[in-house]
Image (cartoon, rainbow, N blue to C red):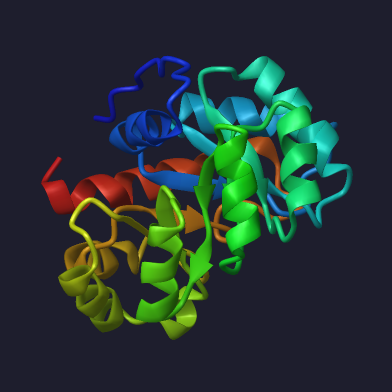
Length: 222
């Protein structure tokens, strides 16, 4: 059974990410979330053991949703996805977010996030991008889109990247395909439409959240 821990609010972003990964290395991607939905959806995710939540910036009023989530769930690592430029990084920080996730690797976005003491996970799809992102100071890597990055590719990346590098496949991840990616060396996952889509009730989101938690536990034999 998953042990739900209380994360301490570290000022060190690398430590903050490490704590979240240790609790549950799954990022809830709430694309399309509205501020009105945020409290109920956030509550079922936190109750299910999630420690990381992102609201993509192409959602309705994403900064307002981030403010709602960070105020109600300060124990979680909350921020934005689909962050494409430095001004957006500043906006997320001003809204209370501590997590920056991008679909691509933009050195300026990474640098701005580091300057604001935020956790930053840029998107990469090749070894060249992966090494460049880590050298820029990224705390981990979003492997995106995972539909194009097979478990065999994750295994090959794991063989050459630093052992401590967090590799998080995102895109098309379901409870059924997590184990093979994890066996290949994935640290955790970003979970999108299989977890949340606009209009899905909090009860339905909780059902899917628990399914993902159970799937994560299976490889460790729990």
